Amino acid sequence: MAQKKDFAIGIDIGGTTTKFGIVNNHGEILAQDRIPSNEHEVVEEFIEDLYKKLMPMIEKSGGVKNFAGIGIGAPNGNIYTGTIEYAPNLKWKGIIPLADLIGKKFGLPTRLTNDANAAAMGEMMYGACKNMRHFITITLGTGVGSGIVIDGKIVVGHDGFAGELGHTIIRPGGRLHKSTGMRGSLESYASATGVRETAIEMLTTHPEEPSLLRNYSINDLTSESVYECAMQGDNIANNIFEFTGQILGESLANFIMFSSPAAIILFGGLTKAGNLLLNPTRKHMEMNLLPIFQNKVKLLFSELKEADAAILGASALVWEMD
Image 1: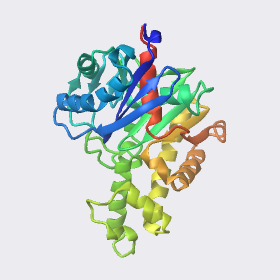
Image 2: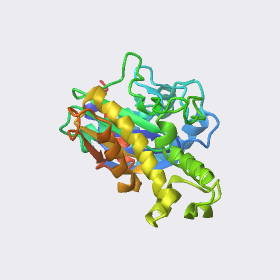
Image 3: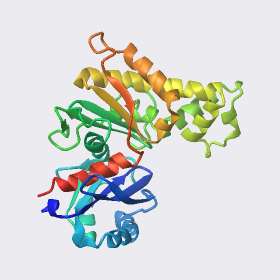
Image 4: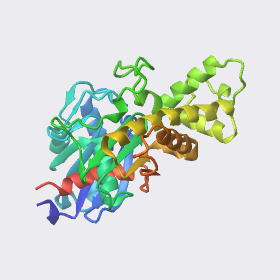
């Protein structure tokens, strides 16, 4: 039984970085590390890299015998089958039986779910949503992930893929999402990648306007550099966050009118922009809500460290195993 063991492993596979940690049965991360997610053309090479980093951590905790299992949060992760299916932000295409492959490699029971659902579980068990039964988490990273909790349960749908709010179309016929071929999805605007695309568009469409962002080459331009320029008062950089917040706020209004959550929790790298993102998001969210929904929903940044929610949530899958 999982409850007899002292430790679990939580793995969070993001579009850029995979973070993993040793978690005890009190929900404390005792050790953690990371590897790149997209440096391996085949998944077996990724698993080998993960094994080399993770096994020494396992040995320091007394070996595999002390572990209840492994929980994984991954893009397009299917909790029913343990597979990653057609993840647009990963190199491994098609259907990848990741839980089975990692379970066999480490010799431990392994369970997998969508990465954003794992983060929502972490928030529900250990973060800002401990006492909430209705909330939505939005991960603003390389992509846009989401986890929807209704009546204290994560919504997964009949096939395990419910809650892909990042791929909802919020600007029909809008910006191309290069990985999916869709146009106008939330992810193509409100992710770190989307902020970079907005920066390129604004710099191109306002060629005469001076901007600190023009000091960066196209290859070096990132959401972080947009933030740094905005903090120095750069007009274009501030307009980029205003536009991103507008898109995100309008989208959150739609999500609120769907499930009426008590709170929406934002986390991921893009939240480092703080009020540059939060203020326009809140403004446009409230502007686009019916009066019965206005001023009822908390818009919060996660209380957990950036990687911790997903690692903790993934590890929580282990304690649910028989």
